[in-house]
Image (tube, rainbow, N blue to C red; front, side):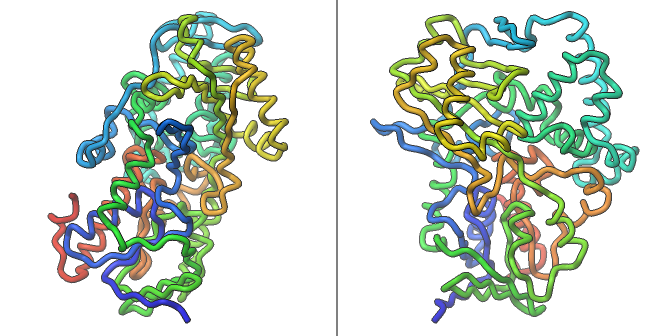
Length: 462
């Protein structure tokens, strides 16, 4: 027999977005229950213990200075930041040659750099024309949404080096290939972050800081506030909206509520059975927003030996299969941790390989970048997010061609008493932890406006 609960607001998903929604709603006086499929909170943020009380992050980890929602929450929760290691030389592998450089610009052919600069300036101008709350209303939305980012780059860049740079950018930011993305989504996402430089930069950009103790602490601290208002290990199978209330069903749990917020990526939200069925417009949206493909790989060493060699640990490579690396060591630098990403096509291929094959491929790249010592770690760990049954890919859902203009209005629009959250619904820093927080708070505001127990909009934000 199913356990039954009654509350004002049910929330599906105890990731950062669902917890932010619950926190806002609870502080406004609503009775809230969060139901989560996993046996933990955090969703796409996940800490991993490595001994001596230290952790590495297997999921999302970085925050940047312009990400106001997450920085405000970090301060409120009493968490500390520490800077991503960025002292010394970065490295750039291009056409089999490894070079060192400082600053944001690698030492490559000036014609290639000029080509990158002109394309990025044009893209940033276009991105600023995309309304964040309604990308389908951009002046050239139809044209931009009917071609991929790859097609635009092929038409508007003049060198193979520039196209390789933007392919690297796309894989690093979206965990997808430029051919996967609508140009309109490419532009919306950049505008959402404040520009392409914000997306790819360490100092001053999206990769500037990490959280002492790991990013999952953000979710865990919010969960501590909510206490027994969270139910874990309960995948939601069905939601029924009778026009007066909602019934949320998990395997051994039923929640009767006035309204529900589904704080899941669209592709996962589409796997729930709805009664009555979702409008075709919304259901077709969920069929068209795939998750990115990424395997996060880490090698552990007694010390971060690359620092003594004057290196930051940051590499970008056009060769791969690891195309982006970082120094991911704990705040005190011990142990030394190299982080490498398999993204897009590389994740799709090596994600299907056995663990030893994937490990060998990653360490071969680390050896090319950092020398023989990098091939011989004391330990190795990786995480393929496409294999996670309640995630099915990271970093976030992205929109292929035609989706924004045909189905974009369904992304946030409530269906009866069902509301939508998750970082994919954010207008600012879409796809990031920051966007997840603001999306959860926005969904809670919608519930308040709808009049559940007369809660006031002014109470929405903690």
